[in-house]
Image (cartoon, rainbow, N blue to C red; front, top):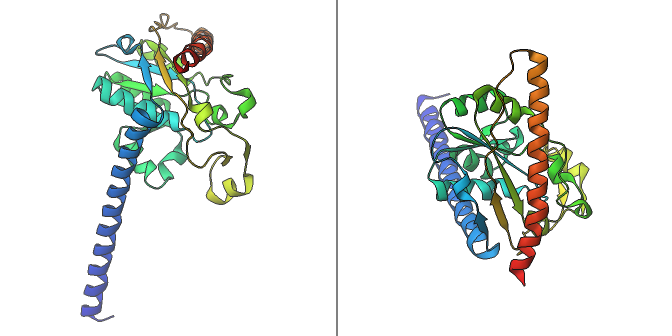
Length: 260
C-alpha cells in the first residue's frame, strides 16, 4: 500500500470516528431533551419526599422497577440529579450500556454496571447509589400483575450493612400504564442479544407519574459472623421490599386522586 493511500485511509478513518462521535453526542442531547419533555409535559410527574434523601453522605435509594421499557430508571436519575444537584450513580444491567445513544447517555449521567464492588466504592466516596433490585423481572411481568413487586436481590442490603449507609425506599407510579407489557418477542430479543423484548406501545402513553421517597431505613450494626450477616441482609432486604410495596399500594390511590 502506498504511503499516500495509507494517509487517505487514516484521514477517512479519523473523519468517520469524528462523525460517529458527533452523531452520538447529538443523539444523547436529543434524548435528554425528550426525557425532560416526558417528565414535565407528557407524564406531568410529581415528586414527594425529596427531603428524605440525605443532604450529604452515602445512601442507597431502592426503587420498584416497572413498565415494559424500563423508562423509570432514566426518569428517576434525571429527576434526582436536577433536584438534588448531588452525584447519583444508578446501577444498571450490562446490556443497558450496549444500547445506542441510551447506553452512552446513562454512563455520562453516572450509571455504573451492576457490581457490588462498584456500589461499595461509590458509597465509600459518600455518593448516592440508586438500585432496582427486582431487575429485569420487574419489567417482564404482565400488565395484569402491575405494581406487584417481584423478589428483591439482597445485594443492596449487603452494601448497606457493610458501609452503614441508610436505605431510602422509593415508589414509582405511572410506568406500568405508560408502557404496559402485552407480551414478548423472544426471537427478536435473541437476535438483539437482550434479556427480553416486550410487546408494548412503541411510544409511552401519557399516564400520570408520581414518585414518592420514603423515610430512610437505618441498617442494623454489621454482625461479625458471616451467617449472621447474611441473615441480617435478608431481613433488611425483606423490610425494604415490604416498605416499597406498601408505598406503591398507597401512592396508587394518591395518584388516582390527583387525576380526578
